[in-house]
Amino acid sequence: MMSNQGKHSPLLDLFLRINTNNSRIDSSVWDFLSIQDTYKLRVLSKSTRDALEKVEYNRCRDGTDYLVPFPGFPGVLLTPSDVKNGAGLFTHQLASLKAMHKAENNDTQFGALRGGILGDAPGLGKTITMLALIASTAGCKPKEPDEFYDNEAINEHWKIMRVNPVFREEILKSLKPIRDFINVNNPKGYNLFREVAEFASPPYSDRRFPTVGAFEAFVTSKMKGTVPASTIDLFRMKVVAFKAGLDKRNRRLFNNPIGKRMMLERNLIPASTNLIIVPDALLEHWAEQIRRHIKIEVFADSIDGHGCEGVVYIDGVGDISTARFPLNHNSSKPMLSQFELANYLIVLVPFSRIEEQNYMRKRRRNEDVILGTDLSTASRSPLLRLRWFRIIVDEGHELGEHEAATDVTNFINDLASERRWVMSGTPTTGDEDSPDFTAKGLDQLQRLLLFLRHPKYGMSCDGQDPSVKHKRELKKELAKSAWNDDVKIPFLNKIESGREKLYKILHEVMVMHKKEDINLPKPIFKQGEVTIFIPPSVQSTIVDTVHSAGNDTAAYLEAMANLGVSGRRLVSEELRREIELKCKGSARFDLLLSEY
Image: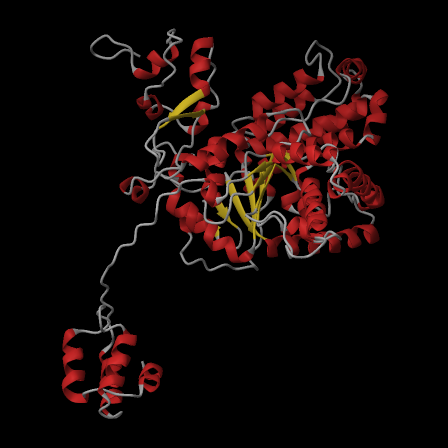
């Protein structure tokens, strides 16, 4: 990559940089890379890797340049209107994003608390802040659960099974998702699949596939271009299932909550999708904010960079690239499958859809019991079949308002995700003058920790099997009891240990700004004049009504002022002169207004 002058291109210059004193990156580099490309780069130079950890954000509203975690906030506030108006994130939003990045990366182990509560006061731009966080991790997938089995034990059993023709059935079962996809969507790929299936079916008389991993890698490499990644994920899930069956010594782990959760989430489809659950009344708000302030084509899988499909899906509406505003939400519109949902960066779902999905789950569970079908899979919603990258609940204080958790709350708590956020300017609600306001607020906070899956005061999700409901309720009671003993009771009794523990927890999960703590620029008010077209028939009605009302000049002037004729032209100059000449005023404004 050399230019005509013999110099390195900016991209090559970046990856060859050895000057550790200069951590700034030439902005022209990003013209060569898509969002997906940036996460696939292999950086061998430590100095380059260090340089890539931070990028410069030069659109802050205070005029200062800041270094932010790579890759910054691509596409945020970069729509043509935003660029024209010089839009950018405020200082307090960058501070919130820094704290949120820390909260998501303090502990990256599987099952760790990664997320928190974004509690900025109303009006401080929580929606844009959260969209910036989403943009900063676009293309990332959730961390894969640890392997809970002993690979040596599995490989010992594999050596026996690979020469046993009886094991052919297990191998063909693992290949079933690939076969099903090809039969329906890609018949031309059947011959290739048949070759792979025949080659991979035991017994193996030669040295092929010495380990389970070798078999998995072979199938993946052969079928990668023929079936989508989601189908490969289903194949891998099947492999995980028979791996677990080969290792008999670790069955004790399945009685452990963490082990159950590992097994559950290894059987879900990993997705880089962010699920945003919002009150029905805020669905339009979120869609409008995304449309106005996110340059969607930055995240699209298109070669020319102009496509906008496959980035944001609005439940009950469709792809945002084809949506009409104001939205025409259709609650009866079927939900997409888990495979289709997994292809989006953002999925917007209203609470009413959660209620519907929970109702369907309960109904199917009853049918499963009657029919004797598999409770662990048959009753699941598409929302429960994915391992989301991030779940965000707007107005999330509703998760903590009710002492007896609602069905909607339980459904949301069952969703699998690597990262979780509650958005609310009022994380705790109630009457501040009530004597038990503090106690109720502490209870609400603990219930939010259940959703966030706090290791001690929350709860891990270990499956949706209704047969273990009583065990889950017991775990919730244990978490609540620990909270009461460690935090609530000492705090209410004004014991220092209670205050210290509450402060530590809030410092860990809460990101919050108050309006009085920051210096926001004063709003700019612009006066404008708007001319509104009034049909001739309506104009005639106005003239006739005012004319028939009498000659009360004061009432006429009041009526015209209320109509906006004085100061703003709601009617044409010709109509105004006609009214003045013909009517000379009117006291019947109510009648005029009703006719208008």
